[in-house]
Image 1 (spheres, rainbow, N blue to C red):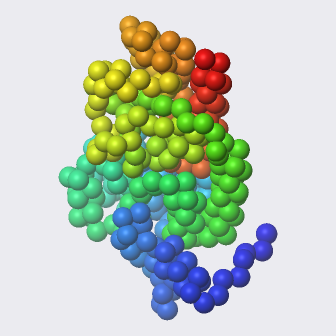
Image 2 (tube, rainbow, N blue to C red):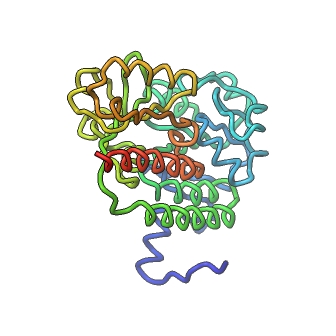
Image 3 (cartoon, one colour):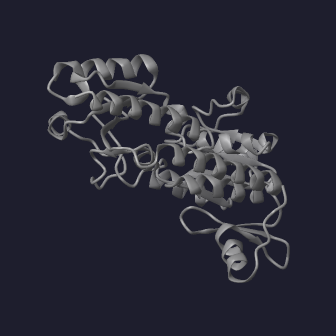
Length: 300
C-alpha cells in the first residue's frame, strides 16, 4: 500500500507528533507524556517493563531485540521464555544493568513514581506508555516502529488498526445507552474512571460507565454506590474462575437491574485491559455483551 503524500503544515505536525530523525540521523520520538526519546540508532537491546509493551514488540516482529521483560508478559507464548527483570511493581535494577539495554519501555500509570525514578537514574533512554484513546495504540505502533527499526511494519499495522477500529465504531454507533459497572477487582471493589481507555471503549459500544465521573484512574468504590447507581450490566474483568466468584457475590442484591435481568458477564482482561492491537477483539466482545443487555432491556 502506498503511503499518503503529506505536504505543508500536515506533514510538519506528523513529523513532530510521532517522531523524526535529526540531521545527524538520530531518532527522535515523543512518548505519551510528551517527553522526547532520542536514540542515535534503532534500539537493539530493549527492556520491556510492562506486558502490554512486550506485546507491541512481538507485533512489530522485533522480539529478538528484547533482552528482558517483567512478570505476566505472557503473550504470545514465546514471551514467556524471555528473561525476567522483576514485576511492573518492582524492578531488579542489577539485572537491568547487566543486560546493557539501549531502550526501556515503561507503563507510566502502572509503575510507581519511585520505581520509575530508579530506572530513569540509570541513564537509559525511556519511552513512557499511557494510551488513553484507540488512536494512541495506532501511534504507538508507529513510534515503537521508529525506535526499533521497524518503521514500515509499524506504519502498516497502525493503518490496519485504524481501519478495523473505524469498522467497529460504525457498527455500534448510535445505539441506545446502557448503564455499565466495569469491575476490575473485588476486595477492595475497584473500577475505572472516565479517563481510562476502557471507559472510551464502553462509550464506543453504547454503554455508560456509572463511575466515569470519579477522579482516580482506578478508583475504589463501595457496594452501596454500585447499588445506588443501579447498573443494567455488570462486567467483571478478571481470570475466569475469579471473575465468576465476583459476579456470584452480586446475587445478594436482586434489586440491581443487572442482577434482575441476569446481565452479569465476564471478559478476558488480557484482551481488553491491555492497550495493545488485540484490544479490538476485546472491544468486540464488550460491545456484544452490552448489546445483549440492551436487547434484554428492550423487552421490558
